[in-house]
Structure formats: structure tokens, C-alpha cells
Amino acid sequence: MELYLDLVSQPCRSVFLFAKVAGIPFEFKPVDLAAGDHFSEEFGKISILRKVPVMKDGSFILTESVAILKYMAQKYSSSVADNWYPAGLQQRACVNEYLAWQHTNLRLHGSKVFLLRSLFPIIMGSEAPKEKMDAALEDLKQSLNQLEEKFLQNRSFIVGDKISLADLVAIVEIMQPVGSGLDVFEGRPKLIAWRERVKKALGEKLFDEAHAAIMNASSLPQKMMQDKSKLEMLKPRFQRLFI
Ligand SMILES: N[C@@H](CCC(=O)N[C@@H](CS)C(=O)NCC(=O)O)C(=O)O
Image (cartoon, rainbow, N blue to C red):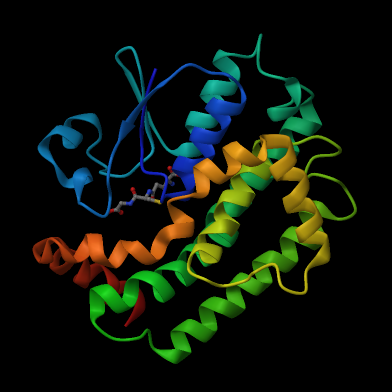
């Protein structure tokens, strides 16, 4: 199995972490987004969506992290612990519920904050408009509240007392704005305790390995500035999104 990944990307980190922690054998195919590798002719043959992660299992190509995570959990179900993607009807439904919710909530809002804080200034050449930043921070706050109040409640993990794909997808998204220097855990003891349980379940060393690139996001500008034409390509996208 080949995994096309850039660990700066949160869905790539979830796929990477799951494959590693579950002992699923794979070949890491690096795709450097900041260098524009995903616009290459070679990557276009793997996925015309030009996004990572992508999985290639033999001749079968799959995009979308959630689909890849479920594929891996099901393909290796005889060796992957049941808690990751429980076979029980209602427990699996709860994992699926979180995975469906997060796309337009925690992922959307955490990504926006990261893009506005870390990439907007490089691509647009100025700080992000204050009202856009304030709105993005407010949306992120709401999503974090909902994660605590609806999905975590007083449980150790999102679906009971063991880690699942839901926790994995949640932590990688939360770490994105953290990579932009924002302490999203401030004043949230419940979330801090959950983060520590997730880290322990994954293994601190593996967690840190997966997050090294995003925790060093301040080096992205330097890399991106090397090819100004690629930066220009991103400008219209940022204008559509944020202006
Ligand atoms: N829904 C997709 C999202 C994939 C995605 O947006 N990947 C981003 C990195 S986080 C990407 O490759 N972006 C490159 C681009 O948009 O140019 C998934 O979960 O896999």
C-alpha cells in the first residue's frame, strides 16, 4: 500500500497515525504541498483532485481521508483493535456521526484559522482582515464547545472509554490552529485531559513525529516564497475565500 502524504496536512496526519499505530504496512510517498508537488504531472496521474492524502493499494486508488481510514480499518480488521472502528452497530454509528460532523465544523473552522494566521500574510502580502479573523475564531470556539459538550461529554474518548478514528480525526484538526501559534486549549481542562489521553493511546513519540511539520509551520513562508508563480496561483483562491 502506498500513502501519498504531506504531514503539514491534518487528514494526512490521521491516515499516517492510524497506519502506524495499527501496524499497517505502507510506503510513504511524500507530496510537498508548499513546493507545489500536487500540481505536478506525475501527481495528476494519481489524483486529478490534486489533494492529499491519497492511498494506492495495488491498482486501487482512493482519495478522502475518512474513506481511506475506514478502508484500512476494514481491510485489516483481523489485526486492528475493534475500538478504532467498532463492529457494534451503534458504536460504529457514533464514530461515523463524528466523522460526518467534523468536515463542516472543526475541520472547516480550524483550517480557516490556520490559513488566516499562517498563510494569508504570505499569499496576500498583508495581515488577514480583522473581521474575517474574528469570525473564524468565533466559529472555531463554537466547534470546540460542541466537541466538548456533544461528542466528549464526560467520557474518556468520543465513543466511550477507548480511542477510535473519531478522536484521531479530531486531534489532528485541533493541532492545525495550534501550529499557527494559537493556544486553542487555553481554559479548556476537559479538552486538555482528552488530548493527553489521545497522545498516550497513540504514543507520544509517534504523535510528536506526526506533528513535527505543523509545529514548525513558521518555516512554511520561506519554502513557499521560493516559487513566486505558485504563490500567485493561490492568490485568487484566497481572494474568493477571504476577501
Ligand atoms: N476532504 C479531504 C480533504 C483533502 C484536502 O483538502 N487536502 C489538502 C491538505 S489538508 C490539500 O491537499 N490541499 C491542496 C490544495 O488544495 O491545493 C480529505 O479529508 O482527505
